[in-house]
Length: 324
Image 1 (cartoon, helix red, strand yellow):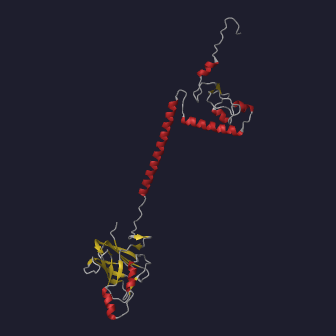
Image 2 (cartoon, rainbow, N blue to C red; image 1 turned 90 degrees about the horizontal axis):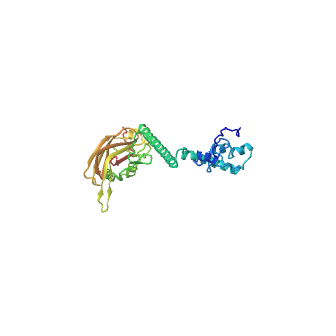
Image 3 (tube, one colour; image 1 turned 45 degrees about the horizontal axis):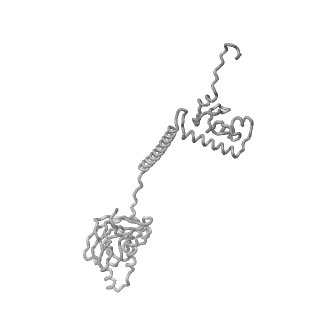
């Protein structure tokens, strides 16, 4: 009995002292209530029930879809729109609080902020390191791939079957002109045919220059440079020569033994040899190099073909600038 003499009454602590000693683990505020379900300490900053407005912990509100354990126990149904929106806000707030503000009961606000900044910095550094690693791996993979074989374009445009010829103004050799005048024969279409040699096409289907009923060797002359104002010749710089056969002519008419001479004057009084070559019996371009020099006039001499007794053909003849 409490009223019996000699009995010692237990020590009772004041409720205010208990509240002051306890703190909310989420907000570090003074505890003013506790959750009716999990008995967690709650402060004035804790969320409230969407139905009755009572304080409750975020975990219990989330499990009760915005209702406190008391409302859940009574079976009350909250307003759908307001309670759902509040529950979503509570969930988002709890996630951000847990990720950006890792504050322990013994910690402080500044420690939580600097911890969040440190985590963000580490995340950015990890992402940058990952991107750099991917770039390095891609570079190594590209370096290990086999190199594609270089296909010469012959200074070409489009699909590479056209060559940028430097020849201009094809002309009939003087010896042939004199021969036609003395014999009184009609002028052959040699001048027009010469255009096929400098039309810029070197593929197998290009037009063909065709020489008929002419004995070899035969000389063909061209002007390769430009003329400035006042008639001053401007030579070009060349270091390669191109020949081409076409599939439209019989192989035995293809030119075989060719020679090229150059001159620094359009009249070609003084000729210097560029080279003599043997053309392969195949369609398409064939390129030969020689020492780089200035050229204005060019003479092409065809010494022999591949066996035809009267006809000789050639699809393309061009001077090319130095490679590279």
